[in-house]
Length: 99
Image (cartoon, rainbow, N blue to C red; front, side, top):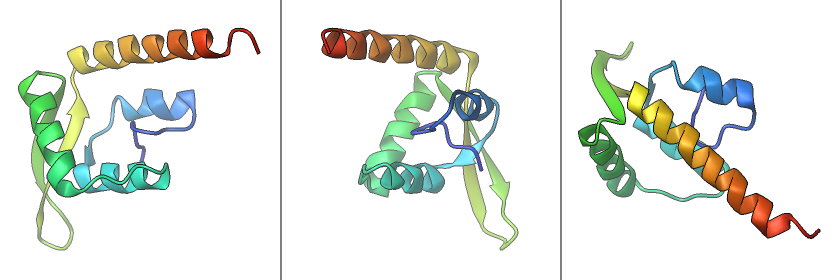
């Protein structure tokens, strides 16, 4: 499964923009990168991003019969991600320009 948050390579990030994935996997991926988020923190963030038009979600039936909500970036979400990545690059450039 491709994970947009914390993805290690540009190719993964690009692929992640086009795939849907569950919130629990986002939480697990963030945990692998040292960020401890509970479902009580993550899901309100996802819901707000969806309300803001940056994500869309759909409910699917998993193999085990449970319903799972999958999240995917919208075109506005992709633009916001590109803008955020540029700001992070600028910040890192300023932090490390004299090293």
